[in-house]
Structure formats: structure tokens, C-alpha cells
Length: 371
Image (cartoon, rainbow, N blue to C red; front, side):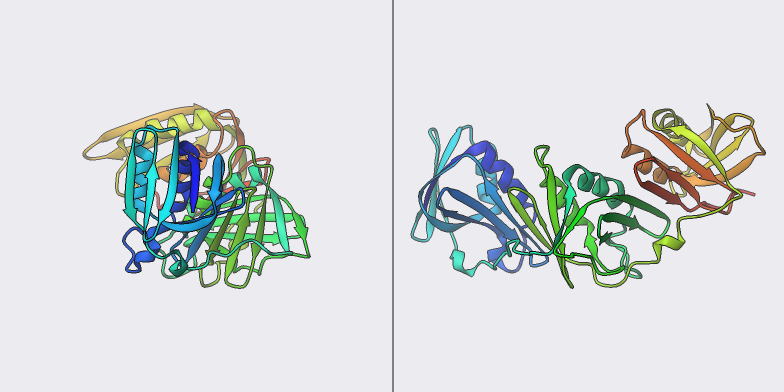
């Protein structure tokens, strides 16, 4: 194998692939990224046996087809530290030479035939989603998951794909985020009911692999795994085992609540101010809605007290509740500062519901009010 690559483009693709490889795996072969050059195409592959990635590299000249293994640590450092615009890779027996205009390296290279197969996207049944929608779904749900949960399958995002309707749900048991949108089914593709749970780590990798030029992505869910395809990348991931909680029962549907129109930026500002002296263990903020004002207060023996006001369009009876300021902040951070949303509140013991016009819903369970 002999190829000449644009260093920056190779480094960007290598970094994505290296994020999947296991640098400390007991299987040494998994500490590498496989490079496969054929025709005018170079593909990088990596896997940890749970997640796998195939990514095509742009700016490559294939002079001699072939394949080799590139060590994640050593080759990654060469790509980062080199100042050359282009690098030449040439396999020489059990070693690989990397040459630039001002540098040259010769590294040992293991047998590429020992590298596990990383599957390609060959499914005829799949869903096509707008790339922007998929990125928003990940951004707005992945933060609410709990990768350390052992009781329920909360370590990933539930993906439901049925006809033109697609939605993603993430929860850690104390808050829940749901994002809805529209896609297109090919080959009568549908996801399994309540069990297509993509690990958070894999989902974030998928989101990172979608650049701004992508118009759509393809997703194929199977019994135990999922495949995602972009124009230059394929990602494979095993699904989280177990069943997802009945999330539909969590989103409140009530007639006795108060719905208040809010703007992200001003609300996030007063949340941050009031939280300056909040208890760092409970992280609770008292919120009181009434008389055209939202009053946020916090009090701790060591840090002091805070009281911050925000004008709101609500003149009814006072409603008090205590919420974790981190959970509110996580919701606000994934929206634009000038975005509008609705806050649905009922009492100190009922969850707060926040919704937007583009299919996003976020539920936060309340904390006990101080006596």
C-alpha cells in the first residue's frame, strides 16, 4: 500500500475513528485504526466490538492499493504534531513508513487481516432523516440519559421510527427529554417497539460525524444493533439491552395547570444568578410564579441567600415549586437565547413541563420544598 494524503483531512477523519478504538484494550489489534486503500478511495475503520466506524477520507491519492493498521496513539500524535501539508504512507513488510516534506517515521504495524470486520451499510430497509433534525434530536435528548443506570435501560436514547413519524427520548428517571420530527421510511422500515435504545456514546459519535454539508442520514435498526450512514461515514452500534420505561406516562396531560410563555435567554440568566448561592449537593432553587413575576430564591448557611425576579405573563394565584437548577439549565442550553417556550406548572408536587413549537418537550420532577 502506498497513499498520499492531505494531513489535515486525514487527521480529522482519524480523530473520529480513534475515538472508537480502545487505546488500552487487552486485544492489541483494537488499539489500531485500519486503513484500506483501493481504487481512488481510502477508508478508515475502528471498533471496540460494541461500536464500529467506517469513514472515507478526502484529499487522498492512492498510488498502490493495500491495507495496514495505524496505531491510535503514535500515528495520532504524528498527525497532530506534523507541520507538513501532505503525508505519504507506505507499507514495507511489518512496518509502515510515514513521510512528509520535513519529517519521516517508521513504525511497526500489526497484521491487518487480524482486525475484526466493521460492517458496511447494505440495508434496503431504513429511515431517511434530515441531517439537521437528527443532530437536534441528539443534542436535545442525549444529555438527559444515565449511562450508569443498572435498574432500567437508561444508558441511551430511545429511537422510535414509524412511517413518517420519528422521535427520540432520553431520561435518567428524574427528568425526560423528547424530540419529535418527520422522516421517510424505505422498505417498510420500522424500529422495534420500546427497545431501540442507542447508547449515548454511540449517538454522540453519530452526531459528530455529520457535517454541515449533509442533507440527510440513513438509519437502519435491527434486533440487536443499529446502523447509521452519511455520505462518507457508516457507524455501527449494539443497542442497550433491556426495555425503556413507559415515557408517555411521564409527560403530564392536565387541565388544572398554568401555561406561561417564556424566553430562553432572560430565564437562563436569572437561573444562573439565583444558583450562585444554591446548595451544591441538592442544587435546588425555589420558584414562585404569581402577580406578574417569577421569583427565584436560594439559601445556604455557608454561601448566603439570593433572590432574583423575572417579569412573566401570569397574574393568577401563587404557585411554588423547587427544581434542580442543573436540569433547567440543561434544557435552556440546547435552545437559542431568543427562542420561546412554554412552561406548564401546576403545584409543588407535580412535574414541570417545558415545550417548544418544533416538537421538543422536557419534563423535570420537583424536589421537596423546605418546610
